[in-house]
Length: 91
Image: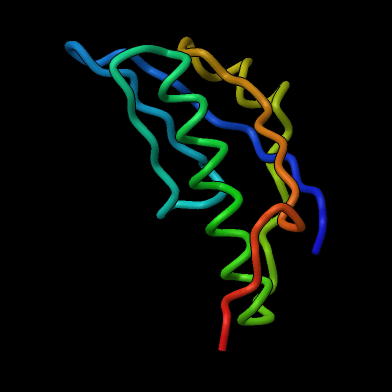
């Protein structure tokens, strides 16, 4: 189990905030407030990374947050999580 940091891009669309991880295509969050979307992004990130660890899959390297900020007008933040915080499934 490890600590990870991946950049996420947050954008307001209508009444929702949408968060996506450009390095992890299937990891998306949303919320009615920015805080909700960020919290959900943390939860989605840890669960996805934990599952990938269990499958012993190679994780993509995180894109530089500076590179993303240069090319994106939306909110770009680093989301950090620790897969040690996820309980192992009971057998």
